Each structure stands twice: as C-alpha cells, then as structure tokens.
Image 1 (cartoon, rainbow, N blue to C red):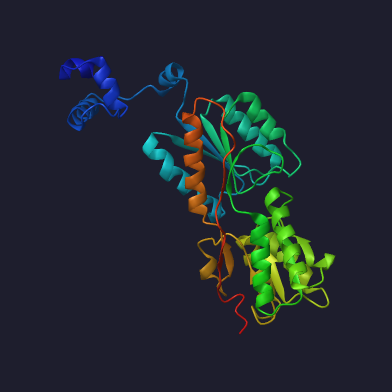
Image 2: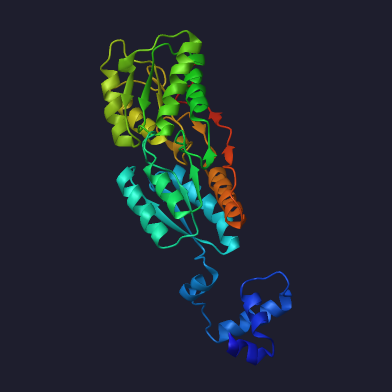
Length: 331
C-alpha cells in the first residue's frame, strides 16, 4: 500500500479508502489506485485485516441438502446480497443430520465468521445449537425452519398455512381420501403436518393415521412411502407431499404401479423446484420464493451486523403461492 501511495503521490489513507470502496474517495482516484494495485500485484492480507478490524467478511450458510434446488436458490439469493458488500459465503451441507450441523456450526464459529444463516436440521425440541450460538455471541438468521421457543431472526413461510393450502387444493379438486407424506420431525415438517390436519377438519373429512407416512426429504423416501400408501384400502386419491423431491419419488411409485396421475392419485408438493414443471406429469406445488428467502435473510443479517446494540428478533414471512399444474388437474 505504501508503494502504491508513493507511486501515485497520495496518502496511505487515500489508498486504504480507495481499496475499501470508501464513499469519500472520488471514482477517478479509486480507478487510479486500483489500476496501480493491479500493476504491482497487490493482494490484501485478509488474515491480518481480520485481526485489525475484528471481522473476517465471511458468512456461513448451513443448509440440509445442497442437491435440493430449493436450497441452491436460497444460496444464490444470499450471494446476490452479500457480494456487493464484500462478504464471502462459506456453504456447509448438513445432510439433514443434527449432529453434523452442530459440528459444522461450531467449526464456523471457532473460525470467527461474522454471521450465520442456517436452515436447521435440529428437531423442534432441541435448542442446543442455538444455546451455543448465543454463548459465542454470533449473529445468525434462521431460514425455512423456525423452531418454537427460539428467540432468533427468521425468514421463511408459515408452514401451517402452506400445509393447509396444499391440502385444501386437493379437496377442491374432488379428493376425499387425502394422505400426507410427512417430512423430518423439524419445525417445518411438524408445521406442514398441522396444516394438513387443519385442512381435513375444515373440509369435514376424517383423518386416518395410516394415511400419514414418514418420508424424510428425498425422492427415494418418497417412493418407498408412496408404495406403502398404495397398499392401503381404500388407497388415497390425493397426496400432499412434504416437498417436491418427495413428490417426485411418489409420482414415480404411482406410475410404476400402473396408475394415472392425477386421475387415480393427485399429487402436490412444496418448494416449486426448477424441475417441477419438467416431470413426466408436471407437478403442482406451493412456491415458497426461495430466492427471496435468501435475499431477505442476507439483508436481515447485514442489518444485525451493522447494529451496535441488541435487537429484537426480526421475523419475515414470505407469502406462499399455489402453483397448479397437471398433477392435480382432475377435470
């Protein structure tokens, strides 16, 4: 930096501000400094800078399934907001394993990330992860899953509302034996189950315990769970699936069994992943606006990082939207 200052005849402070994009340095001066820095192969020492500034400009993003395009779209939304502010994102994939997630978060905290965005795999009654974060005073925002009783920033949808919306759509399509392929025992999975039950009650339809089958979160589990449902008598004529990958597996099971979607079994998922309309029967789903979740979470975290005092937890709910495609259109 001294070499750049001497070559251009400016102060060291001017060079520092220009390299950091400070607002009181003119664009012309900043361009000269950057050009000279490039000629001299200047690279900032981020370790030294983090020690001086007490920040690393790193944000940890912990998600349960990087292969699920819903979370990939969230990551893109986070990056769109962070990059203009010179923050870099470190992504960890917990594979829906609470212990793996705990280890990953502890590693990120010990490496002094400035903040975290987490789609937590913890069960609804396990708050150990959040106790750890509060002990380290690490700012964090929860996305997609909102464990009850955890005072934290959150961005996502109302999963009770989502479950009710999806199930009521099946009711409106004439389904009367409606099943649910249930997700993990997280706040999200439990919320969608509550919404499913609420819709059945609202429609005056009886609830059958055998029509609620655990399916985790992927297409393989959706296939296996759907095969169990198809063995029921009477078999369901409509199924609300925890998410789109589970619905993809369920659809394959129905078609492999020689049945028709939606005439024999109508299917609806959640997430509106990018391939939902490219399936053998385009999938009806609930759009959660995954990109908007990522952007809103990143903005909320940046506001928290800039704040000098304790803030009340912010809660941003994205309105879920029904997307109707062929998998539920029975008429």
